[in-house]
Structure formats: C-alpha cells, structure tokens
Length: 127
Image 1 (cartoon, rainbow, N blue to C red):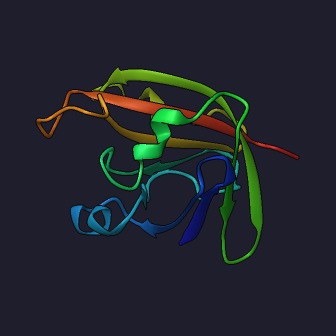
Image 2 (image 1 turned 120 degrees about the vertical axis):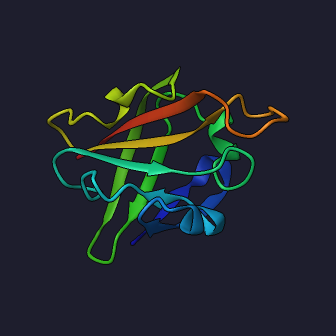
Image 3 (image 1 turned 135 degrees about the vertical axis):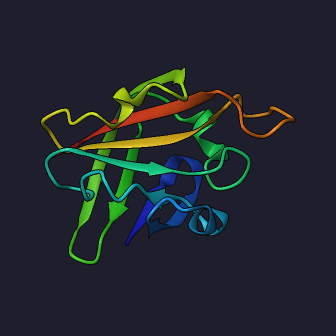
C-alpha cells in the first residue's frame, strides 16, 4: 500500500495493508482501521522490533519520515516518542491533522517475545 523511508537511518520499506501476522512476517503493516497516509486522521503502521522496525530505537524528534503512496509522496516530521502499555489505545486516536504513528514492541532487546509495552513514534505531515 505504501513505501516508508528514512534517509537518516537508511531504511526503505514496503508497507503492507492489514496488520495480520502473515503480513507482519514480511514487513511493516498499516492498521486498516486507521486513516490512509496523508489523509486527515491518524495513519498507524506497526512492525516487529527485532526486524523491520528495529531502527525506531534510533529515531529522534525532528527527523523526517517519508511515505510514498501510489498517488503521492508525503513528508512527516517526528514530533514525539513514547512508551505505552500494550492496552493503551490512545496511540490510535485521531488528532484532527494528518498524523503518522509507528508502533513496535518494547524493549527492543528483550529476549522473550510478547512484551506488554509499545514504543510509539508520532509524526505530523509537513506542508
């Protein structure tokens, strides 16, 4: 459905539609119930911390993340990074402006799978 790029971290990923286990095995996935990239609302993309989204650990506020859809190329600026409980669904909330939210499990170097924490990077569309 889209391409996700970060020049600062030398990443170029294909984003699949639908956050199923099958899709996540191949790459980051867009949560279908969230807004499409570039639309008003919150576009949420999830990925595994030990593969496709391991680079999120190095992301800093102010960095650019680019999303390329079949129709256009969008530039987002990272505005916040936080760690939340897996039960905290506020990360999916519509913020009234085009927002990109990247979510992965936390901590990044945990040995056991299935942690109860999520690492959340929030970015807003730049004009």
